[in-house]
Image (tube, rainbow, N blue to C red; front, side, top):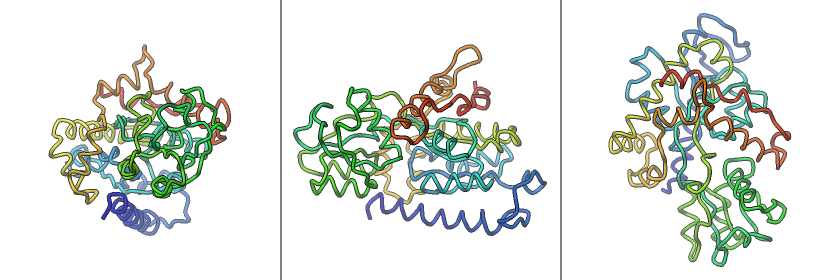
Length: 343
């Protein structure tokens, strides 16, 4: 079974399990129709986490499997939910406390009326996102008039927007063909499109086309394609102590994986039910963040980090295609408080 098929099955199963627990058997006996309140059951219930089908968020469950939540007295439930709209709906209802997503998803969630902030960054893509093109396309200018398959509204769309903008090309100088990652791969392999913006594991499949190659990857761009933890405003305001311990556990899990790649990759492969070599092929192009990386991104009291600028850049790119309004405010989308306690 192909990697993307397996991941899809895992995501579906996890979403069903999450829905059954979150919405049917709430801790404290609350019914799904009752509004969330600051009650004893809310304080004592588990921290609920959901993330996309992407290896970069694996420290969410590594912290659980390594006992790092438990040793801090935390009860944390993790699950996979795709797409972003479903996570937004769950967080808006109060059924989700933290979601895994990229910088752009934080902007989209905020604009969708789901207040929160990025409180942690897991990793940076160093080539797992790319634009795959057919023979004869060797530079950005060659994309004029070409058909590019993109999963519109998601990270690959942001990738192509960023690349065209950096290259001085206007979006209407190309033809964007809205397709899912699977659909984009099929269209590229059949010759129906000239290029496709993808991420692993779909990227490797597209490169199976004879004479295809990557025109650009995330390795040569600013780190706009990082995995983050986006905490709800409710969690930040009501349970800052638990969130602080949660962030500590995430960093310890990230450090374990980085310092023990064989053991970490083995746990990741077991969670996703994938061969170890397929996990290693993705992880090799992934930079797991250290405390120093967190400091570089979140900054200090006296020195702003890089993260604010990157989130603003993402919002500006999304405004080009009306995902968010022009000059969308992003100042509150980064909360450095919890990560700064690490350093």
